[in-house]
Image (cartoon, rainbow, N blue to C red; front, side):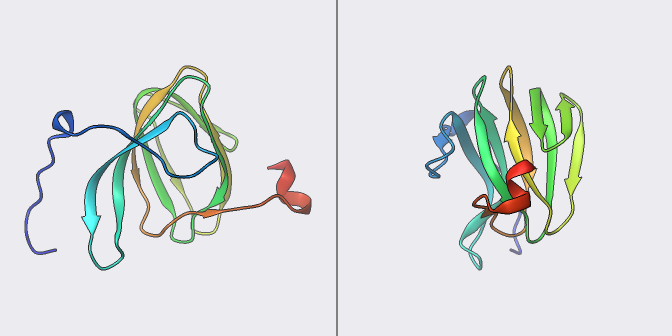
Length: 121
């Protein structure tokens, strides 16, 4: 990417995440990477009570909370909070009241199917 990219987020629609276990979670892609054919930077919106299944981040993840509340594993975040999740770490995501977050993940998340100790995360 050698050019500036301007995204007017108020002019694009929220799209439901395609994962089957992500009802009530929506995305707006902010930056699209042609080489990886995915958006490493996005806005996510969670409806009140929405969840995202246990998953890991092969290349880490950055989350900045713009509105609302969100729980990522053991960490509870509110508007203005930032969390870096180290590469290879796994967590579930949930929100009580709903939220909007800015997310940056250099690589695709990997959904973790419960086995043994991971069920307790």
